[in-house]
Length: 320
Image 1 (cartoon, helix red, strand yellow):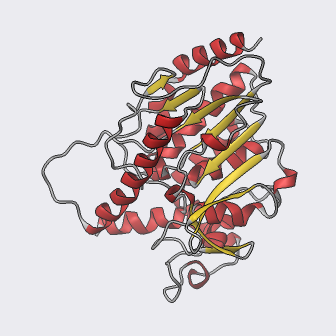
Image 2 (cartoon, one colour):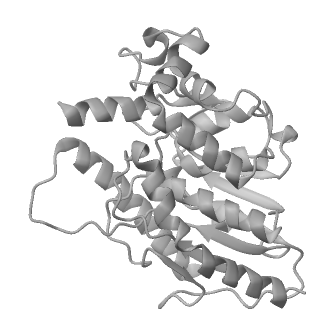
Image 3 (cartoon, rainbow, N blue to C red):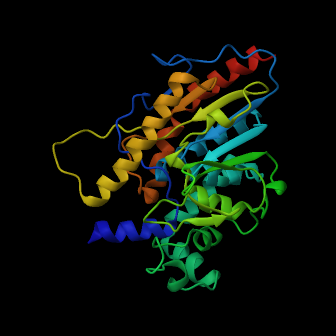
């Protein structure tokens, strides 16, 4: 009963993106440009600034936040960003002008004050459970209603209002391919990129029916302009959960299957081309719905920041 209750509460939090139950081949916890068996880009020469890709990963994608804080500390502002699912949510906040510290404070406050969370969902917005949850639709939760309630009220309405150019990835359900959004309404793009089947309703936009972008491009570093910028990809699709011999339940199997698909896509992409800096935070032991463990996830990733900042300084030196 407790497990089901946590599932419902976390679902209502709406930060559903890529899950992470598959074993990582990219060694979670690494900050590397020398992965074995991976074709890496040439040394960055003469490129003007950095571009950043944030991958999906449900609760594990909170790991992006300390890296944004580190960029702020170094005085580095990406000139281009891409994001998928939860990575699109955090990416949109950062591209809108929020600092890493502000995003961290906002997310922690949102998820550690549960009564306040429910108030935001139902009272402040004037919505009802019926508008948020609709059992007669293809999925349970209406994503645009959900994210309108959870995201900051002053989040820009349109891509054109962002301070950093942002591309958001979703999956075109009928065309069965990647659909990248760079302009138009921002909220529907975030909702589409995060519309995990069964849990969140597909989003209709631009004449397309869109679902979670993790099915086609979980960590979209390949959409960054590597000719103009030094590229960084932060991926949280890996897992370090051990096989204890138990048979997973139906939800765990569903979530794990999605994660296996995502992680496989990232591994295959890395065999062909990698960003200049590929980061795999050590969050593989966390579950996809560990939203209320946000402080623990953030503390885990805080430990990686010295290594990350050294790598960023090296890349900055090489680009001068």
